Length: 432
Image 1 (tube, one colour):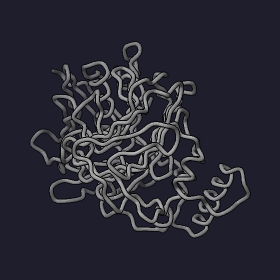
Image 2 (image 1 turned 120 degrees about the horizontal axis):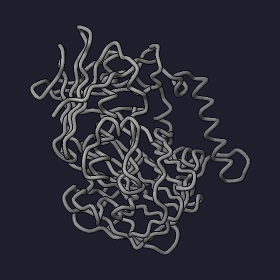
Image 3 (image 1 turned 90 degrees about the vertical axis):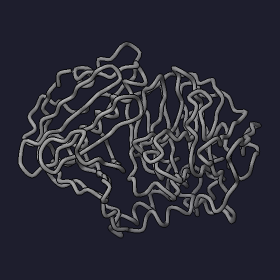
Image 4 (image 1 turned 135 degrees about the vertical axis):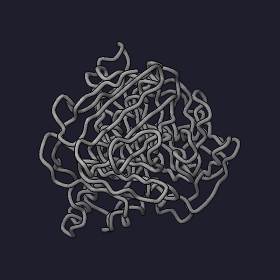
């Protein structure tokens, strides 16, 4: 199977989020959140409402607190019930309650079913506090958070084996966010995902902030049962860890509403406080050229964090984008996609699959990229053109199992050093 070679392009840092380490920026952010809360309540600026009140004020279809083995929605008439390895545990998410309980899923057979079915027309939003007990990459499978699963008409939020969280809204098309790996296990995070099939906007919010968005849209009219911790259609995706405060809306929440919900929790105080970046966080540095990214890369091998130069970050991001796209191809059209498709986005009619954001026909002075595909298998390389740069290789022989290796000297392959934990915070080179 011959390699298909393309050249990538070098680039520059794009203006990103404000520097929250400045006291002035912190003050402005706090005021902005406070005004958002006041606006939602239609009142003058005042102390924020508690978390539960703030959520219910946005009129969700259903809101399950998951503070026992079963219960009723905080709104409406639907109910929920746990089965298998689900237990009530505490303390839960930092929502400010005197006693905060959560549903603890054992990762083997625990699931929660609800009497909520359908209700999602042209738009919808899912919210949940999540706390992973293990990395999906370590367990080697998907962790399902919540949704209304239906073959060909997905509405599913889940963590995948690359530790990314993905929001599926059609027949395999999805929006992706990769949180920093070091922040996932044994830590609570609020995740919100919304889709509007009219405007085509899809958004993922992480701890109150918009971290991923595209115009991928999705299919309208979700009619399946809403479940938590496991999909009844795509089975075997049992969540491992804690889930709490799950809500469902028949509209796409606005950014100000999500910010207000998160601001009403006790998590805000610790989130606003300045903190040092993780030791393995590789922040972008200024460069020149057409690359527009403020992403931070966290990767580790068996010995610990691997530090990357800016040129190496770009190479890794291209392979990571190819990985995302090929995974979508495998799930959506049941085979991998050749280079011309992932560059142009010319997929079969009705297939919602991302493509590479940048035109790789421009020259990257640092790397040469190759991609080979065959059936459900694919293999991509980023080979350094200059001494001193790491080489990277990503390869998959079936769905859901991707091996990534690197070499400190020249091209990487099967026998090179394997990467374990991998994460990207920020945008991706894959886009709709």
